[in-house]
Length: 116
Image (cartoon, rainbow, N blue to C red):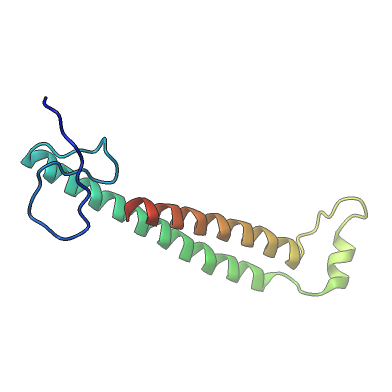
């Protein structure tokens, strides 16, 4: 193969000469590789939508779970040990939920910048 350089064009164009997708190693050489790249971009975008849907489902199920927990501090004190908090209090569950939501958000942001 000859020398080639990547042209990352941000405008819509029909010119596929020296076209690179996402990074320089993903170089389009022929019509077939262009079609396979199209399928690859569709799969990446579908994966992003899958992550978003999983995030929505987690938020809905975690809100439902948090609503089922008792909010009474007396009940939590009776169920938890003095040394280790073994009872599931609303505060503990909310902390865990926030961490998982933050992880989902981080994956979504990374994914969106990756496919942009």
